[in-house]
Length: 635
Image (tube, rainbow, N blue to C red):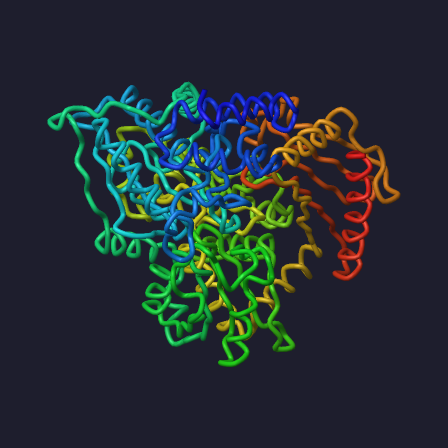
């Protein structure tokens, strides 16, 4: 009996390692080619790191509709994994485990995706996939491995020469008419995580029926091993770089509604990419548009450690701290920050008192949506006769202010589940609704041509977004786009200057007209195997025993999306999802759902009133009682 097997059997018999974790360890060692898998497991067993073993092996990482996401660096890094070390203080080898993001899970995912793409392929020649990555630990290694799997198994692989923003991957899939794509990223997660995000041929993330098809292929695999095709049957590797960047940037300029507003208004902006990919496009893009852009030097370079921030997430105030400090030094008008894969954007702006103020994702999205709808009417794109064909799409947990603004203009609003893939799914539906004999090669049309077609035959997407700092203003990308968001924000800033006010001033004007809408996002973090079990139990508790009263206000309506039976404003069924909405008698409401990408359960709080301080206080009180109730439920 091998050394690891003997140690494992003894630990399972003592109850130090669960039967399930023991089974997954055996499964992993039978199916991996990791040069350090056995040695790392022996180290953990010999040192009695039972919690670490449970966290790494409590489950086999299942491929979901969002792909894969998990730890690629363990809480405890074994000597075997550390090896000679990698770049930027990274271990030499990724985290060993069935619940970890490593080559074992990565290659299974890629083999399954390629299998599905080949089965679905009906074109001439070979299927093709676009592969990109961010600046995280192992991202380049993972991307090159994905490209090798794809070409070995008979697909052409378009691999970006270096790190690129996630939305550029979506754009490239559409532009190159590829059949699928992958971005190696964990977005705004902590530095120890990485992930595998999969796209289908329209540039959108996996949704049905593709999701089930790919998931079935991936989850049926227990090994990372595969047999490469003969050289003559293998695909080609094509490197993408500056030429694709230029094509994408030229298309981004079409997001501007009134480019003339930027002429002669040279705003000074501080930008930080938080050690990620955003500077590749945003910095030259904003400078081309006439902005004076100053970057945060210590955050410019790609660095998977994200050493200057506690979290590389523009939702968190700390992520913009260095940018705000620099803005005060140089007298900048605003700070823009994007997360490592540049699909999210956060901002800080000067208010009426000249102080830098952070805007929430809901406020940024509401401002952008309001400005774009208003401008489209003023430009004559939208009129009373065609406005019924214009649509704003938001997620269910995004502020109702966007709905109120859109409906005042006669624009329809559609709510989707959390996740930009559902907004992308709607964009595909609208594109497919255009008669084939009218749209021709849709992806080659100008924005004006496609807009006219959608307004005549389908639905014209004016704006979409989610509260978690993701926005989209066009349909040539099918995911949230931090690059396009920066362009839209630049135009909004120029508009505010033309009106003699600030972006914060515009926000206050909207509140004055529509009422003060405020939201809070909260979460409870529960890591590892034990944390996952606690989250599952808490979610089940809300479903079986929803709150009847919170903070002195009774629940007047409860919507449990896990039970299904819900439809959106267009009559499309909303998929079942672990999310509970509760409306309170005093007008406040909240939602609760487990995160699909992080070890936490998330809470969304909504309030409306006439006084900002009063609404804020009411949401603070709501969270105090919700948090107390959550801990009581967990015992």
